[in-house]
Image (tube, rainbow, N blue to C red; front, top):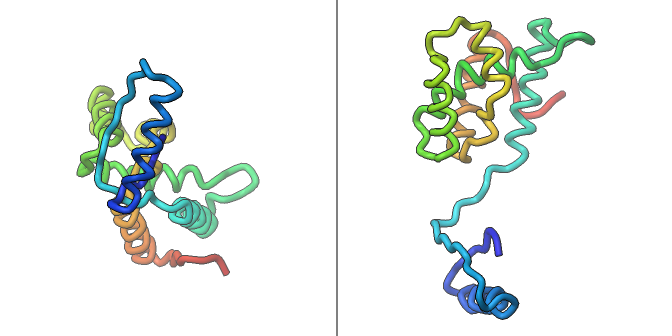
Length: 154
């Protein structure tokens, strides 16, 4: 049983599912965690930032047959994403921050940081609220640079 939304009205169903677990394995041991339900981040926010990475890369000349939007993606991870992870309390974010501290990320030059963040999950571990901050920061920053990004492609 994974990601079961427990409410007062679904309590009976939860009990049935737990009984099924033990009926099939009476000696079994299971870990149970109950945390406040929050909606997972939508895939549309992921699609949105990747659309923006492409739009920005095209406008800056980084999107050609031989180049991709990875430079823009990694730049945005550096400019906005790492700071958001610094403020996050999730275990995934804290793990990334500890890794960056171990390799002395903050003293690296920009080119080295680009290489480092290319291999590190940043936006994919954001909570919904963190992704909203990332989206807002991208909009404000790039529109200030006269590179209008928008929520859907023309």
